[in-house]
Image 1 (cartoon, rainbow, N blue to C red):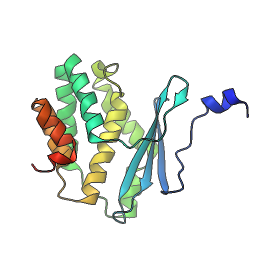
Image 2 (image 1 turned 90 degrees about the vertical axis):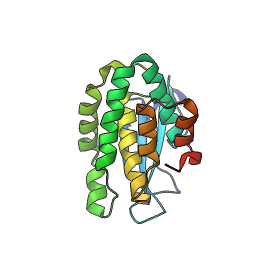
Image 3 (image 1 turned 120 degrees about the horizontal axis):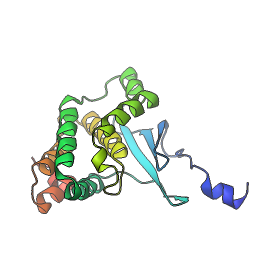
Image 4 (image 1 turned 120 degrees about the vertical axis):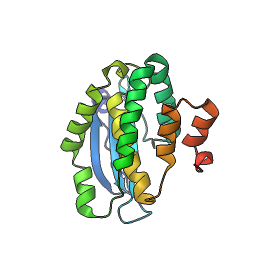
Length: 187
């Protein structure tokens, strides 16, 4: 394979360390890998690659802080639309339950269904499409999976919900950063 073809090839999300459960392409710009975690039987881990020009990034782990910064950028440009998105995500948070069966995990990771659902949701927030680093579709997808990941690890989890609330309620930057980091574990 020529160097040019190799450079433009979509990278695999396979890794020797974790079992790949799903590989989800988003808008030709992101590839999200969902892996079997190690903390519990149904734990999931998320990793992604992002295309920048013709190159793909190394594998990255989505962090709450990256997600929060992007939402703040979107909010600066489109406050009302961003607040609507945050309210929508808080509703999803309230209905998210931990994975307890293989069938639940399989249903969650049905790529076609998941992407169709996220596409439909992202259409509602079209004003945010070109704001920030991440696409709305990618943010919603990551948010949904982070919620399941967090609640599967601990069904009384609150960190992501707390972050969404602080963002929606326009808390100061210190509170938002604390909520997005491990320093913000307390409610």
